[in-house]
Image 1: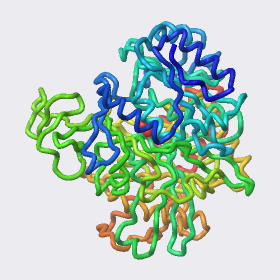
Image 2: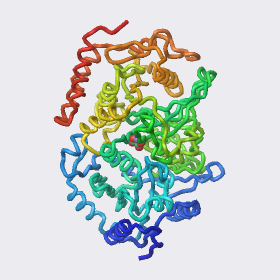
Image 3: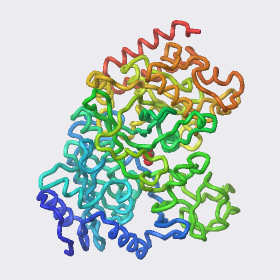
Image 4: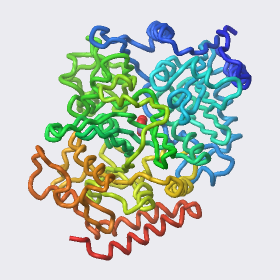
Length: 601
Ligand code: OXD
Ligand code: MN
């Protein structure tokens, strides 16, 4: 079988590649070196094979259009498994499969699955190559689309193999798109073996195995063993008018605007003060204790895999600038003028084009229900190098990471949760994280308004029993000498008429300013049964025309509503049985007691 010479002496790696080739029977094997010349060659190959369509290269240099199979457009959580020896290790919130069964099922699908294809070997580093934060993975894949996305999303190539050496530890990431049939789709994680097998999909988190599979599910398992945290969090730096930068991380369930917050532009009213936001990462943070006793964070990724619909110059000007070059657009609208467009995107759509399903499209077309025909799939994406973001922090690749002053959790709540809330201490902060919830929007399955709990926004991404995960978080509070403060935010509170009370987007910096001031022991707050909320006038509203009384509504804490929430929290906690740390039950009981007292005026 044709193969470029393995550029490594790592025997275990070479043996694994050979073993995999024997089973999946590709036509040839190609080791990805990560050079710019190779990237150009592979892009040309993708165009020749019809996976990529070049966009207008004058308007969008280095940009390509791609479409996935219409049955393969999002992460398939119901086909995602944690394969641990016992079900107990996996916990009640993950799908479990016995490791032997997982391997057997995967082997059946992989048998001959790469016939007629090239098997690519992608050595990649999550985190800067050689950083103490970083982990190495090797993805074997038969998808050129995956290779070209991984070249953007991770550090890839020979430098990674050099770092790995002849004996280094790596995560085996085996991917085959197979026949893209859902019946052959499985996303299997074997944390005890440090390996991942993914079949039957070629899209996003199912197939770019460095992202959710390695950097969250496998890494969270490793983090517990090694005493650090692998989290579904953005990282950003807030530079104050004196030039001092404080870094925060933030975790939100999907559809809460994480990428937008990571790239925030200060609103006019605060710009005069001289604030600047620096982006370090938009999706994943790895956090370790530094020699100074603080928590330090690193973004393990090298690119953004952002949701396109809703991205425009109002919601995220920096993202719009980031995606002007060297970007892959998947499942958006391809204009006949070789530009791209999506719902709630920039300016008017092209006059005509081809939609995400490959169907002819123009703005007047209707679907079978008489609604405007979708141009882009709601989960269509851009894959863009992080280094191109105008707000990227100069130190975003610093191998020692950045020191974290605050951890922010958030959810989408129409009522209940105030705009911002500071936890009473670390353990109470862990309780806030463990009870993060979002209300379903009309777009999601299930009844609108129903609350979905998503602890630390990690529900689909925790690679082990979430009860043990909560215990690990509590434990981190004792091992970090100077832990960051923990906050909870809610940008989505509505008035009685269903109108959002808070403008969001860039204005969220006003909340970040208060958070930073609290970290410095400066900002004014009032203590309530649920934690500290900003004192009246503590949030700077200069230049924001907020009607009278709205701030009071945004910060209102209603003990009756909070008490009504407690049964749901208890039911959620109960599923973890003996794995639920007693401390969280204590927190719940203490909150119940505090809610019986009056809210301080
Ligand atoms: C993502 C997600 O794709 O959280 O980042 O689903
Ligand atoms: Mn995410």
